[in-house]
Amino acid sequence: MISFKERVLPLISLWLLFNAQALGAADLRPEEIVTVLPKDAIPAILSPAFEDGAKVSWLGAKDLVVGVEIGGHSRAYPVPTLSRHEIVNDIVGGIPIAVTWCPLCYTAIVYDRRIGGRELTFGVSGKLHANSLIMYDHQTDSLWSHLVGAAVTGPLKGEKLIPIQSMFTRWETWKGLHPAAKVLSNGKRSLFGSLRDPYESYYRSAETGIIPPRRLDKRIYPKEFVLGLILGSKAKAYPFSVLSRNPLVNDVFEGVPLLVVFAEESATGTIFQRKLEGKTLSFKKAQSLSKKDPYMLDSETGSVWEGLTGRAMKGKLQGKKLTPLPATPSFWFGWVDHYPNTELYLPEK
Image (cartoon, rainbow, N blue to C red; front, side, top):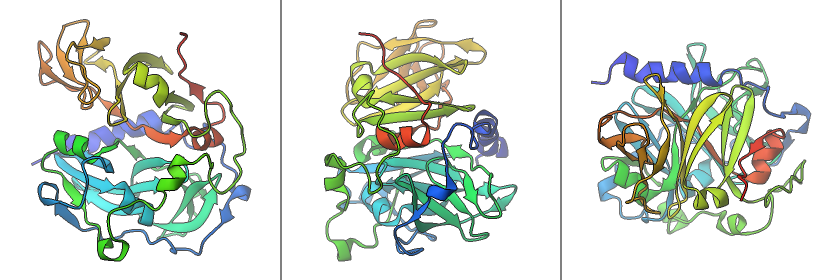
């Protein structure tokens, strides 16, 4: 049985790390919220059903999923299904979560649904802020920014949801890391046919949402994929094009030693804290580092680590695990529209 400390203390640590974010790092303007659809026209999932991942045949190996693991319980939420619902209210490992997805900005973020000891459930408001999903809670009807995780209007204005670490990756990658994973059932298969994402053509196009972006930050292509991170009141983005050339990045941001790991074949990025038990580690590629399954060595002990999980597989630190940080995949235009002062990781050639 997973203990209370194992389930709750990591969330308290994340709250302490991210609480300063609130509205400080983001540019949120309630007057710029626009209505594009009626409330609940896109139906959020309130009572999700799951299937055994080992027996699922309708989900392709390269299909994208949002993976969540809490307290030994692993779930996969297929992105094509999320594109039709945008929010899944679920409970994993005893923690009430909201799996949120905005196809226009290509942002997948998982939040703890509790505020001040009160459990909320979320629906799709039909509104957007700078092309990003605006959620509402059923309990107070407050409006929430999906990308920032903050209530922008209503009785809960100013409250902030705690982000939970998740992984945006291919099903084959998540299944390889979590063989016992459950998969969100796609109850609309008979209606929609094969599991296809209705936004596929949009992802490949040069279109930047349905609302003109507020900023044209030309440091990189507007629809470049980035991995976004918030620490304190600061934001930073790591472009996939850079990470594909540098799959291991030892970085320091806001005084926190970080490790960014990128698996090029599945375009999966994760971010960890490099400090373990009071010692800051530095990492380099293992000889077996591949585009599909990255492995790495720490320079201090020579231990071998699994890149995507941050777990030491061999050596003095075998069994130890780095602390993952919630990171957000996003199109560049969506990220910089909400975090205009974001740092951008662009190492010198």
